[in-house]
Amino acid sequence: MSTAGLIAGVLWLALTAYAVLAGADFGGGVWDLFAGGPRAHEQRNAVAEAMGPVWEANHVWLIFMITGLFTAFPVTFGVLALALYIPFTIAMTGIVLRGASFAFRAHGAEAVGPTSPWGVIFGVASVVTPFFLGTAAAAVASGSIHAPGGHLVSGYLDGWTTPLAIVIGLFALSICAYLAATYLMVENEDQPALLADFRRRAIAAALVSGALALLAVAISLFDGSRLLESLTGRGLPLFILALLNGPLALWAVWRSRPRIARVAVIGQVVLVLWAWAIGQWPYLVPPDLTISATAAPAATLTGMLVVITVGGLLLLPSLWLLFRVFKARNPQARA
Amino acid sequence: MVGLGTFIGLVAALFWFLTARRRSVPTGRLLLLGLIAAGPASVIAMEAGWFVTEFGRQPWIVYGVMRTSEAATSAPALGPTFALFIAIYAGLAITTGRLLLMLAARTRNATT
Image 1: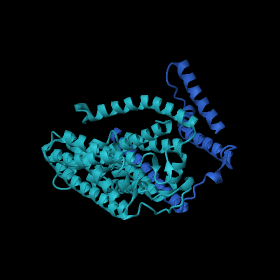
Image 2: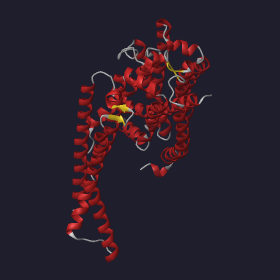
Image 3: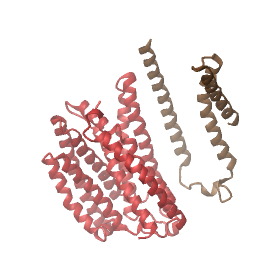
Image 4: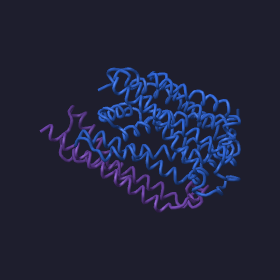
């Protein structure tokens, strides 16, 4: 594989890590917003406790993707930044407000007791951000961004305002909520009442995300978009695995097997993302921008590969340690 | 920037010199005031340095290679977006300040 292809693969891996880790953070915000019943307060605490130590680290992957795309594929970066200016700006606003309101709520509570307005902003931003990131992904996957020779010719609303994009945006939101619900099931294995709350939420999210995924496939059958071509072409094996894995994940949630459910739902996200990535390979943004044609000069790519390797040697063990300290069954981590 | 940087360095050097000579932390009022001023001064010096490099480089964005006007985005509605982010960050700054003051007040009440 070429250096450019290798770096493109690393960037897709970073997107996968972002979806699996930060996706669950967005989902946690969704469950914060929709906390209800007699244990609403405990549900919110469970979300805050699960997110607190790691949510900032999870955004490392987004920053890596942005800077990586900028360095290795500057033409693609420029086209995406223009074509998806509006959904990206909304998502960025959401990310800023989410982080700030999460911190304000936590520290504000120390000073003045619960500060609910920040809780609402946190919840709403958690819903808005994955939805618009999903619509942006749909614009790319459906081949709606046209930039022959690297010059954007499609409009600022093209691709992410279609019915397909709205369905995929809602799908992204529901799969984030699904991820979070299964993670929260694992984190509350020893609390039967909370476990049952998050099991019910996981089932609801599973059914909604499954229905939306099938609806997205149905819409692309009719509008003949590029997405169907990707999923029935090279992406077909992974797409079939996703169709098989979906019911397996739901079964694991239904039978209250949190750990199997968590693995299965992560698997679902990975399969969907890679069916898309491999389905549209060697394009980064079909139908005009390929990996090789939009790559930076060889010297830049080689330098970047060295930096990624050295940085990875530092970053990955650090992240492993972070998750081990805060996420393993560690009684001292629970204050 | 240079003046402030020199000032911060001198205050720090003086502090450590006096500490080492007297074998205890110096308590002179003027020196302590200087140390307090060094905090905000370092932020101002940093920002000033940023301004020098950014404005000093104009009209280039990459010196000698690309002009800022060539690099600017052609995206629509830059004005409203700029206004939006100014509003967001002003709001966040005010909130942060308020919360820090509240936390400080609480700590002061708890210690006295």
